[in-house]
Image 1 (cartoon, one colour):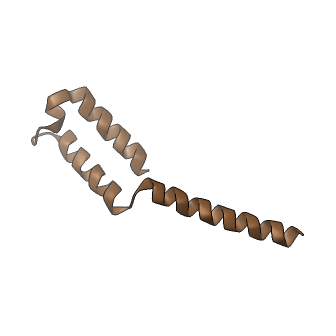
Image 2: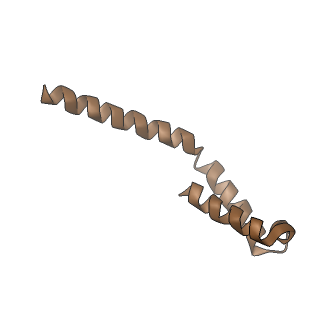
Length: 67
């Protein structure tokens, strides 16, 4: 979810150009908040690795129970 939020905020900044990073716009505030959200919830790659490990563990357990 944080990746999608970041893409939307980034696109808004791109559309607005220099005004997108001006302190007086909602876009700048949104961009800062999304960035903090991504930092707080951790890097996406860490989440992907964690999910991959859980899926692998579940698959190995499923295979060993099927044998």
